[in-house]
Length: 213
Image (tube, rainbow, N blue to C red; front, side, top):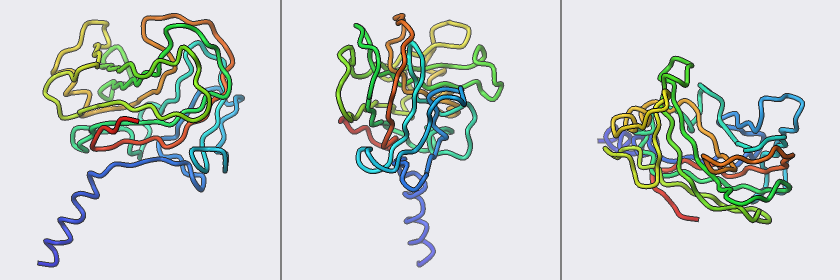
């Protein structure tokens, strides 16, 4: 009876969500803003939403907070379907950047199916909140995922690595093997000039349920 009770307690914990607050130097996901080691990337002990946060700078057309390909172990990659992922959210602060039309926060999820070759993988993105007028201070950006959906969920665009339109089967395969993800400050299909960005990331969350900000 005791063992059965313990099993019931452990199972929900194994499937529960996770939030990276960057407190005490924690960085589940090894979040990056650029691969350039000369650029600022540091966990600040205060000034986040609240408390600690990840502070980064980059010269880019589309600055992107990302979990590097194949990072392990981390809550943010792997088998989303098995984890029962239903949504993700991120707190962002744009300290400085370039204000242009048609810019939105986009969640991009990718896999190479273990090949390391994106042309053999699948990509899916969801266009979120418009930030053409750059917001001031900390804001939460949330995205529905529905990893167990048998079809491509509304709002998601799925593409194969060869450029062809993705199918429901591609969505299911991606959700079983997520290898990298990025939170992009840009809308796919639009082009922007390069600019210096100073950004903050806090409360990176992966959860069983989608929660609107």
